Length: 479
Image 1 (cartoon, rainbow, N blue to C red):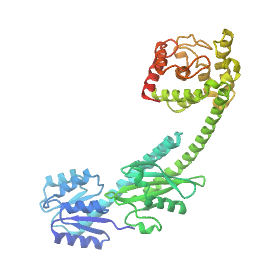
Image 2 (cartoon, rainbow, N blue to C red):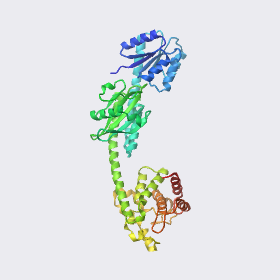
Image 3 (cartoon, rainbow, N blue to C red):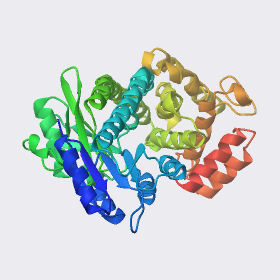
Image 4 (tube, one colour):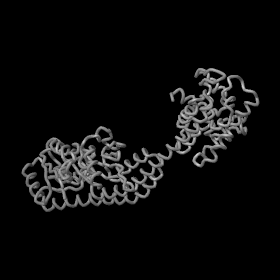
């Protein structure tokens, strides 16, 4: 077990040396500083687990050192000693975060007892915190299990991991299935991707993959991990865990604590290991879901392209409608499954035109009433086509009603206002704008400003006023 590291700060060098030698015989590793400024330098340059400081010294006092440690977020127990004990002195030291205090002259055994008690108290606090984190593990995994986006899932997993063990920073490395790693997400104090791309961490990833087990390492005992480069200065300890699902290696989670904080412990490792095992399965499942979703999107695009192949003037129309509608939906705070349905409906809104004669679709002149009636059939034809495909069923109503008018004078059913599904109202604006600004067999594309003018004129008539306003804002911001 690694020796606990103590820092004794006292301008009485003889007393400092005496106390240091005694504590060394008890198995502690002791550093000394003879003023507050020296103490700061030691704390910033090496790991320290506990500080024993005189309260009255030339320059920075013990209380001022304590305040600086609090402000610098050093989570280290501090014992204050003084040769002029008063109640006010004790209260001030304890208010500033001191774990305990003792007076000069002191008994060495008394100091040893207070050091031991301070470590025991800190250990119990950490164990209580860890147990509370274990109790909330179920709630955390429920949240992660409900996430269907791999990037968001990894981000949430990393943030929860940092919180559960009070780590200062962390990163998730994903494997390419061989021996290369990419930094997927970072969090905490060291959040720049460049920090985590150094050989120290990639070599640690390789070690974890090769040995298929977790490890805690640190700047002072890197030699215990053959083949792993020294971790960057400023870090006290680093925990690295393999992320595996069904015997498939996905990557590595790394968490780190800075110098000035306790090293990560085996209890921390057990907590995060429990979380990472569950999350690895979630990550793999979400990736499978995303693959299915991408295949779904490819199928939808194939349908859209089949329609556009009949009409040379509408090539790319459905892709553009999808792009406009998704940007509009996000602007209106639509997200998740609802936004996905709108997205795919944008691609498939004209699928019914596959049942319309090419002669009508490509006619350069004005359509007859009979021909226009044929065109007006495409929303219903489209909804019937996709209603028999299970993974497209949620799009049926959006496709069916994208030519309804806000004032009730559209088709096929003459729905009005909020009777029209919101997604259909978004599609209506995006579809009309895209059609107006594209070449058609019977006219050239109109300028953007003219299309904007028509949209404004049709607010409350053909189009939902709120949707028109949002669309104009999106377009002016640039899609």
